[in-house]
Image (tube, rainbow, N blue to C red):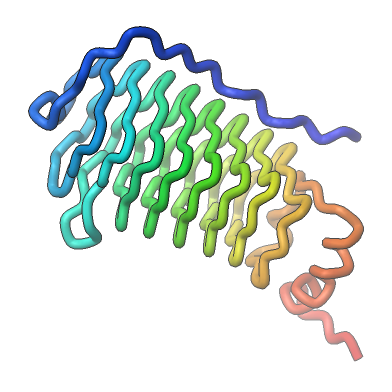
Amino acid sequence: MTTEAPRAPKITLKQLTPGYLGDIGPEEFLEGMEFTDLDLAEVDSTQATYLDCSLSRVNFGAAESPVNFTGVRFSGSKIEESRADTWTMPRGSFIHSEISGTRIGAGVFYDSVWEKVTFNNCRISYLNLRGAKLSDVEFRDCVIDEIDLDRAKASRVSFPGSKVGVLQCESSNFGNVDLRGLQPHKISSVHSLRGATIDETQMMMFAELFAHELGITVE
């Protein structure tokens, strides 16, 4: 059985209109705009839509003053060379979007929907995707200290060239999730890895983790 690779996002950014801090607000519909070198600390952008937009060198706020992106929808958009101590975007969505060269302390994306999304060369300390629905998602050349996929539904997800420290997947539902190449030092709920693909080297490497999770003593 061949593992299906994620399908790439389709993004076409044409002539973009310069965007300013004052354009961003709750439930705003922002289309074809370019936001550059902005500090979004304490900005309220709940339920806003970013359609065919570009965000470059944006600061999504410090841990004590994050931007509120609850329910925000990104579609056909790119986020580049940005940073966030805490990126709070529960119940939001990334559709046909690309995030690259971005550093995230805590990414709070629980109950979100991601379809045809690429994370490229990103550094993430903690990624909360509990209860999220992921399809055609690729983490390429990323470093993720901990990813929480508890109760998530994931289809065609891969991690080429990436490193993940802790993988949580309690009660998750995987289909064509390609974990080959990853070397996590902790995996929770190996029962939930059904539908994932690993290689022979990982099988040997994870043997102790699997035995511990299943309550097996190896002597």
